Image (cartoon, rainbow, N blue to C red; front, side, top):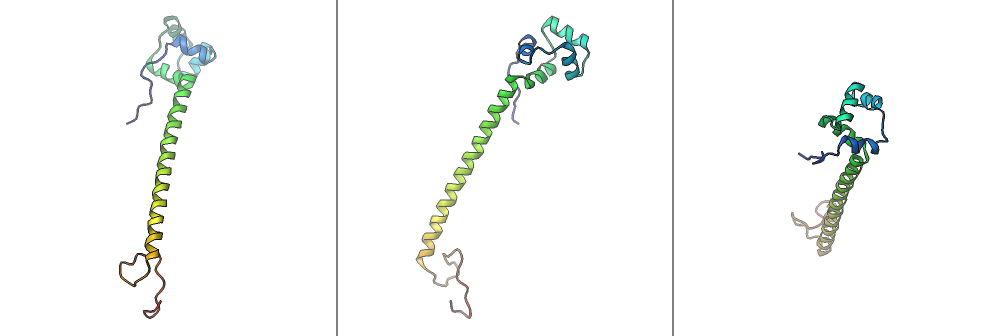
Length: 122
């Protein structure tokens, strides 16, 4: 399982300015809590981890974390595709070399597309 959650979370007082200092009403509406709860969190500069995580992923901290993860994943897939492309080129070269050897009509012919035989004659 891949864990994208941050190891340490910023304090509520650090997140709110990054989010544009939303009003307690906006925060309450976003997190589906009461305004009074948000006021209490702000007074204590503490909120439940779930609330901090929700705000974290909306902040530039979370967005940059996701951006880095997506970029790294894309690069892994790009490099894997390049590796497979090199492997295909290598195999195509080997097939071309084997096809140059010639067709001898054997069951294990080295030709990728053996010529159509009509009545045993090519």
